[in-house]
Image 1 (cartoon, one colour):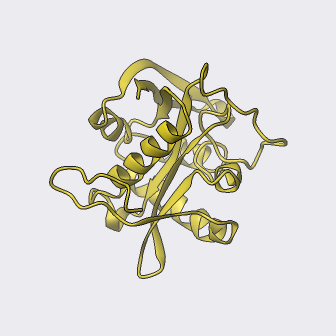
Image 2 (tube, one colour):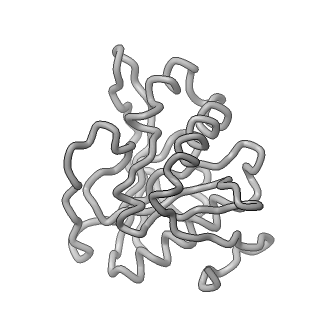
Length: 187
């Protein structure tokens, strides 16, 4: 996407929109990313309980054309997107219906589902996806953005100027809880 402005000191990664045919590759990437990159912040039990319901593929983002992919030699090494729908996080494995559409004049867009292959972490993939998301969000008429960030993702979003609104826990199966950070930005 040539419209992405480079961040000083990095070159933007070329991105493309995800397609339904990418789902199996995303289903392999997400657990690999989560187990490696979230492990300094969450226990193994928390990670395993979150895989699927919280950390999972959301096909609605793909169908809406709001989910970006970074590739290296044809292999997906990063993904992330934004949503114009009500859900703040989570895969679609337990969702029965499409989420309600948001009103750009009244509601905040959502940034969601960022995952990077551990071998490619901290090379600007997340920043490139974030820049693409913010541009698409602006182009769609939204004025604010909400994120429910993992503890590992918080520094990336803070780099982009997102402010912490609230820290809380997401309830999961087996009485497990996942600490997260709600963040917001006016764009």
